[in-house]
Image 1 (spheres, rainbow, N blue to C red):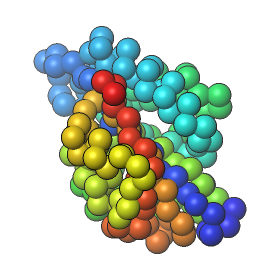
Image 2 (cartoon, rainbow, N blue to C red):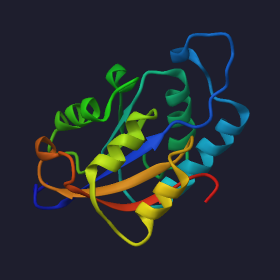
Image 3 (tube, one colour):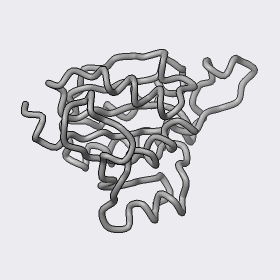
Length: 172
């Protein structure tokens, strides 16, 4: 794959979590979260993006979100469970994405707020249609995702280089 071809990054926030008496890392999805994760998976599949790689936080709620969402995909991408995504800042997430091999064209990251929303805001130097307005109006609720595109190597990913192509949240 040429670095001149556009790459896509989808930033997917985990679905709604429950609040049982466990550590934050071990919180599972709530019933609504399980339903929203499957719906988000269908919406992600509808984008037509063939993901080469999924990077997923090791937290229980992100792993459950991914397990339910990916069932809706025509093909399961290679999945890497990455503990550095949990509680990561946007800068830490950029550093992680900079490590992505250049043979991966389309990457999906399943993570947490505020890092995922911050990353979408920071990367998007431009936006198509009303995607930025919808993301600003809605925030980044559980199970929301943003689709961004940029050209270049993964090592060149930095603030402002991407275009926000689309944004979706469960109540849209």
